[in-house]
Image 1 (tube, helix red, strand yellow):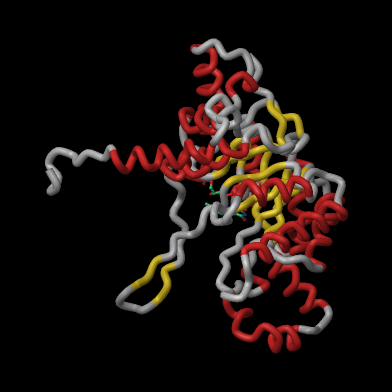
Image 2 (cartoon, helix red, strand yellow):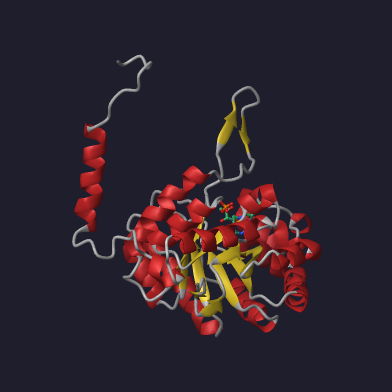
Amino acid sequence: MRLSTHYCGLHLPHPLVVGASPMVDDLDVVRRLEDAGAAAIVMRSLFQEQIERESMATFGHMEDMAHAFGEALSFFPDTDDYKLGPQEYLDSLRKLKETVHIPVIASLNGTSPGGWLEYGKLMEEAGADALELNFYELPTDFDRSGAEIEEEALTVVRTLTDEVSIPISVKLSSAWSSLPHLAKGLVEAGAKGLVLFNRFYQADIDIDELEYIRHIQLSQPRELSSRLRAIAILYGRLDASLICTGGVHSVEDLVKAIMSGADAVQVVAAILSRGPEHLTRLRDGLQQWMEEREYATLEDLKGSMSLSHCPDPHALLRGNYAQLLQSWVADRGGFFV
Ligand SMILES: Cc1cc2nc3c(=O)[nH]c(=O)nc-3n(C[C@H](O)[C@H](O)[C@H](O)COP(=O)(O)O)c2cc1C
């Protein structure tokens, strides 16, 4: 039984990776994650705004910056409120590399080209085995087209690819008008993997206090479905790894992700709520599930439920949607019976 897989050119013994999160802040937790069998670990993100702010402060240009960005600056954490400053991030990466033997993937989080991308090179020099570039983009400008935003994303990837020689993966949200087209462009620009999907945080309003409620709710398994569909569409058509993040909690979720075409999955919420040892349960559970059904390798399972052999995926998806709406039957006991 072989669970081995490829992750952006890295060879992993199995597909379970710890996704970007605060778990890497504590070296004891990191050791437990490695002992529990994590195949690789992704660091929390270093943010574009954080790097830019720090470099303005270093060169004494904070006043210029405050003038240029006005109120926008006040929406971001103060330099001291980030868990790790840019320099601390690199130190933490070096410590992680000394602590574990598994690949460590550093994470850069930003949306536009600029000097902040030099941190890719610094992360490589500090020992990162790969980089994950997180585009958490929520368009609000009525004058910027989707094409412009996509072009900017491609420029960021091209710049970073020129900067470093370690593999780069791109973590995307689901809200792009044509994910396959963007995915193809990102791979042509040099991305070796796509990490699908970023979660949008759960916007809510306190109707008495007239305030936005900002909090993180950990993911639920039902969030997996949008990832399965996207990975099933992309599988077999790109020269890049597909990595599923968001909603993988159980062995069944893991099997579904691989069947859709994921080369690997990233897990965060399930480990945060059940502890690092949950990784062992997932890996052993996957192995047992495959043995019982006589799968010899992960490759035999990978993509078996993808759309790679469907001659017209668009017609299939539209057809399924129309059929579902037409065949809905009210539950007994509901008001519409
Ligand atoms: C507390 C917390 C912190 C996170 N920090 C980051 C981060 O710094 N960078 C990033 O790309 N994703 C971050 N994520 C998102 C996760 O990497 C992951 O994509 C998301 O939680 C979905 O996976 P899950 O369903 O396994 O939790 C964070 C998630 C949580 C819960």
